[in-house]
Length: 451
Image 1: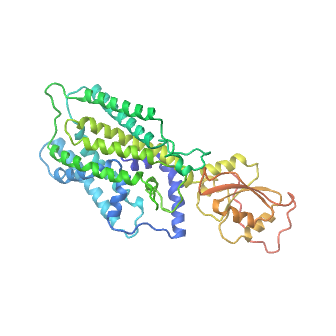
Image 2 (image 1 turned 90 degrees about the vertical axis):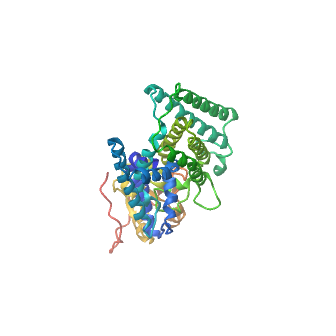
Image 3 (image 1 turned 135 degrees about the vertical axis):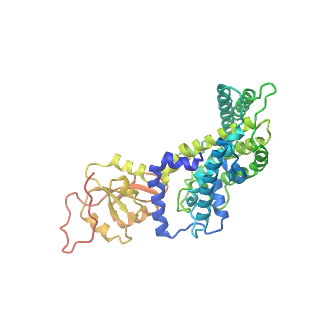
């Protein structure tokens, strides 16, 4: 299953708020729109969403055209053809429909991805080969090939830089730290050597016994042609994912753009995933290229499968988990609840991202307008109190200017969330000495019930 689909199953409830809601509101207020280019636009996005399986997309399409529209009398093959026909029509109609839209956001192509994944899976299954080996041998060979491929990925990533891709907090130049701290040569060599050793073990386990050869169906000639073309496709996509250019988006930003509207959001500078994406790209390209040779196909297709599974796990449990706090507010709102005393409110100032409402159970004051008079009047009614503000980092200086005499202390950092922050504000005056309300009270927000 493509990692793009797995993301919605694994993280859907969390990212519905963190990414879609926040960036949809920003898109409506800032007028940022997606690419309005031609049909090639969605081909590009499918490459990122289906990586590394995109290598087999042409083979899957060819198999659908060649075998998915013909019935031959065999019940099993006819069922396969029926599925291929339905799924192919599903993917084609979704692709054409969304390509015809004038405004194109990256994730609009998502409805075509499950169909593409199913079609690729149907085309990929025969490549694994069919023989009379025992189930235990096939499982052992698959595990050895998959784990071996992952170890080679880590070795290549460690040679390029730090595979984890996160600069420590004390790094003076976080943007350059990852590439400047590769693994020791012994670690790199050991990881690659162990991976190749496991690949050798997988080849020995999966090799045909005696004169037996893996039986291939009528798609054999089509598979060979498709696999010779596959390396160029996956290599081009891998290059785009692992490169950093003078202009944005950088390679590793392209994956998060599959889920957001606002493509101008700044990237957290302490994350750099070039080493690991380079490792995934090289191994995926080599394994699917060598799979074109029939003698190596059972081994290399399993190594490619292991690489694809590892990439999906990395995307779901490392990449998206790392970036989620920077596209949401959960962690910084949690900090407010850790620090507040009973009765100390939190105020959302000059923002309307809805995360502040969601994570506080709607227990937040909101001052959305740029007019600061309602906020000043509200603070006059609460002298000497400590309150908390959630706001964008760029507005902290303006808040200090607005609240004359107040002590503004940040309690979160840009490393925790590079867009939003929480500050503690000690209002001037003596607590309980609020002036009487004016004859015509200023328009202030209604405080929601306590939570």
